[in-house]
Every structure is written in structure tokens, then in C-alpha cells.
Image (cartoon, rainbow, N blue to C red; front, side, top):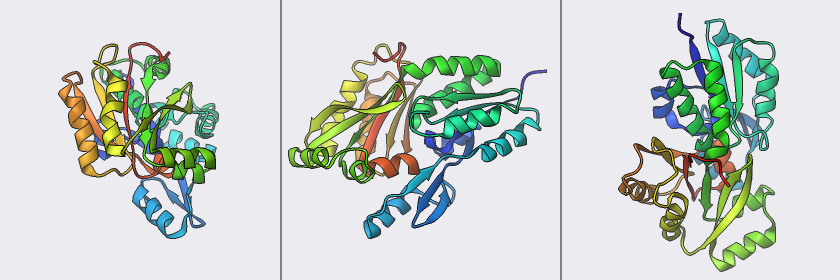
Length: 286
């Protein structure tokens, strides 16, 4: 009898409903607290609600990890149906979600927890890879190990129009935020070894710097897995993310170019005009 495998992740992988349904991924949402009330990410709150609240109150939300009991309940529901589970979480460097998922898994057989060492569709790329490997008949143990090895190859970055949300959230200094504004800088935030860091700083209007950012990240497409690339944004105008997707498609390199919108976690940290190109390299990031 073939192994029944369930691919799952927390709500930070930002795959969007179409891809979630296509790959039959189960999502365990994180919590989002706004105005003293806690909501369920992607269920009864979305990024536009966060932005609307911020414009009225200046208050950023607080996100919270799924707790051990929630993971235990999730695992129990599906293992009792005969599934082996591969659970993907946001980087352990950014949240206690992975720790809670791993501790809960100790009481279950055939539950494999993968720290994506990433966020947003950086983790989503690994979720899709796992689903494709499962379709090929790989075992849950093989899939989990392959995806863990791939975490170092995921190239995830975003260009941010304004540092306002990062400053208000305590993730950059007032001096850095003011300096970027005065100089018209649009920093690239990249993920490496599970942590976010500032990379190249682009100068100019947000929509004008994105083509150069994409060229910098993708080059001629060599050394990159060609199956999937994501254009993930946090509420940009359609003209902006469509132009970016068309630029990537024009390379003629990728099998599928996905456009997804970032969920509450990314949106609450970076703000509306944020856009990234995310993909998997053939070798670990230098």
C-alpha cells in the first residue's frame, strides 16, 4: 500500500488559494492581534484590514505562533486518517512556530517538521517541491530530507518602498528610516541562514527600480531551478506586479511564473509597497 502523505504549512508561505488547492496543501494559520482582538491569519483578517487599521490608528498588528496544542490537534486529525505529515514552518530565527511544531510532533509517528529557514513564498517553494515529490511516489522521510537540504538554496528577497513599517515595528532605526527617505533609497531585504538582512539599496521611485532588482536577482537564469518563480507583493498596484511578472516571463526561462500576494505576517512587517522575486538556486547561496 502506498504511503498517504499530507503536505502542510503554517500560514506564512503565502501560496494563495489557487496553489493551495492545486497541491492540496493544508494550512495551519498564525494569530494576528489588532486593536486588542486576536484574529486568524487568512481566515477572518487580511492585509487590507491591517493597512486600514494602521491608517486610522497608527497601530501595527502583532503576530503570534500557533501553539503546541494547536499543532497536536492538527497532527491528530490527519494521522488518525492514516496520513504521514510533512509540516513546513517559517524560519525558527523569526518565530517560535517551528519549535512548537517540533515539540508537538514528538508524540506522533510519521510527522516530519521542516524549518524552511525562510518566510513567505521562500517557504512556499519548498511546499510545492514537497507536493511534487509526493506525486512522484517519494516517501515522507525522503521528501522531508530533500526539502531540508534545499533550504540553503532558496533565494528570497523583497524591495521595500518605505521603511515606515520596519521602523514602527522596531526592525530598523529612526536614522536609517529617515536617511532612506531623504535619499530616495529602496532597500532590498534578503533572507540568509534563516534571518533577514539588508542588501543592495536602490535609488529612485519604487516602480522604476524593480526592473533592475529583478535583473540583479535572476541574471540570465543560469544556475536556477526552472520549474517555479514567484512574484510576491504586499498590496502593490496591479500595473506594478504585472509588469514585473511580464519581465520575468520574457526571459523564457521558467516553466511557471506565479503572482501571489503576501499574507498578514509579511504585510505587517514591510507595508503595502513591497515586492519580491523568489526562486530556488541549484547551489546554496554564497
